[in-house]
Amino acid sequence: MIGLHHYLVLSALLFTIGIYGVLTRRNIIGILMSIEIIFNATNINLVAFNHFLHGPGLWGQGFAIFVITLAAAEAVVGLSLVLAIYRNLKTVYVEKMNILKG
Image (cartoon, rainbow, N blue to C red):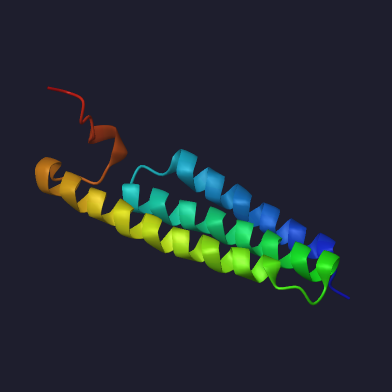
């Protein structure tokens, strides 16, 4: 039987992979993908806690849909910023992006 513990372990694993990706990636697209993995780990937690603690309620799923909407908006804004930076600097590597430099 799959219980709450299994979902929490999966979510913690995804969250750890996402944090590792954010901290180690040099490509900004990879960093944005890692942030999406972190959001998915959060969604698993929301739905799992809702299912095992509140049963038939839909609050966890509703919050998960809200987080998915926020993640889509974050992806749009992030990718548009990446395109604007790429047009000016001709790179997507984080080390070479020093926008404050005059």
